[in-house]
Amino acid sequence: MAALAPAAFAISWLGGAILLLSHARRGVVLGLVLLTAGLALGAHAAGRDQVALALVAGGAVTAALRMRDGLPGWGLLPAGSTPRLVMSLLVLILGLLMGATVKGTTLPVQEALVVVALGAGRLLSAGHRAVALAGAAAVALALASLGGEVTAIAGAAVAAVLGTLPTGGDVEAAA
Amino acid sequence: MSSMRGVPAVFPLPRERSGEATIMLGLAGLALTILAVVGPFSLLGVRLAGSSQPARALLAASLFALLVTALCMRTEADRMGLIATGLAGLGGVALLVMAASPLLTGIILLLVLGVYISRPTPQPLIERLRNPGAGAVLLGVAGILSMIKSDPAFAEVASLTLVLGVVAVGGLVPYLYRYQPEQATAGSGMAWSAFVAPALAVAVLTQVVPHLHGPGKSVFSVLCVVIGLVNVAYGLFGAWQAPARAETWRHSFLAEWGLALCGFGLLLPDHHGTEAAYLLLISLVTVRFPLYMLARGSVLGGETGRWAPLNLLSGLALAGVAPFIGFAARLLLLGAAMEVAWPLALVLMLAMLAFVSHSFRLGASLAIPRGRAAVGLILILALAAAMGIAPGLVLSLGGF
Image (cartoon, rainbow over all chains, first blue to last red; front, side, top):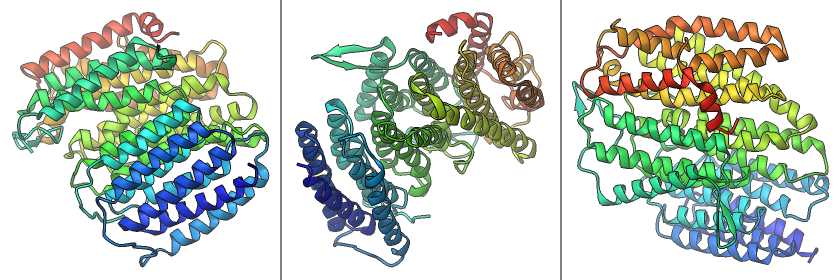
């Protein structure tokens, strides 16, 4: 089980980074799928299979629903992505350092913090509602991965509901 | 948007009659509010509605403020739609109040934020989601860091992010939102500052504070007092410099929030600081916010200020003069500050006195209320006086 933890961290970071670096439908969905897989793997490695199941359900629903809207295509690394690219690398480094610092807990704290940071970056820099809602869903899933069963189910449900919310198909200017 | 004398409606809904979906959402919000106010209960072995008693009292106060505001303000809007929209929002606040941990609060805040930004408005998306989004993330991070017991530094950072999270949701310094008086209140930062954040702050801070120890407790206390004083100063000088009365109203909220934050930071064995913060936020929700909504029509309509008896009484209530609720809250706060450090009490007292003149300007900005607006104003002032005469009852309702 312990061998799964590094893989969970790597997949979580990759998913979060793709979400942060993409502004179109397919990239956002790929990011959500990967980060959900990473968080669920981390929960499974910590022996929390019911939490992992809830995360998979919530992540799958929100990712599937996000395919309905947003800009078409992958939208990876659009012009002006350099700050977000730098941020994703910084988060990776800080996440690795956190792994060395955090002791005394079996919870997948490292994965959750990395996804919260990258999801927050996506949420707070979004120029489109669909992308912002995807960022919010990522943060909700990450927070859910650390709570008990009620928190996990609540987080998964919130992620799923965020996927159902209308986006209006508008593209608003990011400040 | 419908208007009266060229004044935009306060909520963005009311161009047409409220739809069934809005009414259903409103009913769901009302049911959630009642569940949260009634208190904790168990369903299939799972404990739900883990709300703290002061937060429940504040939620009930928010319901009162919503009904008085929607029923009494001057508008040609569909009042049923206003009430339904408000109740739907209050349902979100009830969910926040029911959350038993910062982790869950962060998750539910993301849901509320999602619903909030899914409604199209002319305001840029990024402006709308910045404060509540940052607040949700910071509260979530506080929840995560509080789980790490290996190093006390994590507890300190958790306290820091917790306070900053609440401050961000409230749109206070250093997370000020762009205030546009003509913007519909439900879609603006004012809704978060005056409607969502008070219940959230009381729910989160009163649940977390008993578990704070050592450096984490010190960080929490110092940060609350410092940010509180900064907001008091910003509100005071902002109101002084404000070019319009609407801006003065906005700054009065900042100053009141600042006093409440100072109260939260004064962690004393007799809980007088927390009690003062609770009373200040009750006053903000049941007196300042409804008065702001009643004054909004005349302020935006450019009506000149009046000095009728009701205006003077409103000014006294806003200034926190006896017998209104603000007086008891300020007295408790000064007492708590005296216990900690008399210079702090002196600074707070000077700030309170300096805001008296602004409060009378705000009272005058209500112009001459007529019809249902006058009824609403009398109701608000009567409640403020009743709570001020019996603050012990209000405190006991909050579990103090």
